[in-house]
Amino acid sequence: MNTTQERDHRFSMADRVITVGFWMNAILMVAKLLAGHYGHSEAVFADGIESACDFVAIISTLIALKIGRKTFDDDHPYGHGKAECVAAIIVALVIFSAGCGILYKAGMTLMMGAYQTPQMVAVAAAAATIAVKEALFRYTRGVARKLESPAVEAVSKDHRKDALTSIATLIGVTGAYFGFAFLDPLAAGLTSFFIFYIGWETFRKAGHDLMDGQPPRDTLTKICDTACEVAGVDRVHEIRGRRSGQYLIIDLKLEMDPEMTVRQSHALADQVKNLIFKRFSNVGDVMIHINPSNQAHQDLIRL
Image (cartoon, rainbow, N blue to C red; front, top):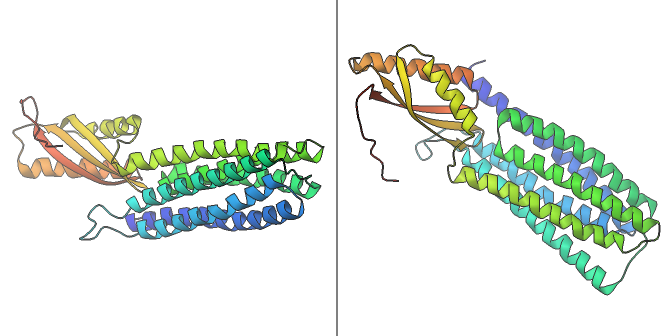
């Protein structure tokens, strides 16, 4: 599989998992809104509203993946992968807004004491949501980890958020069904705090990538070890990395024999880059700077 085919395959996997989530979310949204309305459950109806908000997140993710699929150009020499981080931020904000709306409505119901008695259909809708959303979370998380895609990771967390909130919804609506009516809005209110936490985690990770935060240290260590396997590379002087969507952009400073010609050191740098590309499918580019071994030198940087 060549580079272009591998790139297309990665984005096709991301598109597929997002599309599956989109249609399953649509079915669940309609089912929960109907069950909440006709089953007299505030918690289940709030769950349906939350699913409606998720459409904004999923659509923004699909748009981001379409933008991120574009290769580099004159205006974006590092590619368009940051669009995935922007989508993850949008997902986080949607999650926060859903949490605020649910908390407000639950609080008003508890203060006014206007409780309703849910029907069995509401209980069944909450139970079904847990099973479907947990399955979607595991499927989406598996793809997200394989691709290391911020946008797909954000959507997987959104599925997990729905599964967790539906557990609270199920507890509340079941308790209300058996006569403890206050448990339905109480469950909806407690659910909002799960939502806030997941929204914060999604926002924090996307913000880290947008600010060009370092990738995981173990990933950088493995890349260093790979570079040192090439005969002629004496040492990795420094490594830095940042994320652009599904790909990492790596900056390497290598120490080599100072008596090498430019042609020789350039050939070694190409070997290092090719080996890193072969070992790490999520590395999009490697910039290599050569330093002479065993000679003092000062790195110039203004950052």
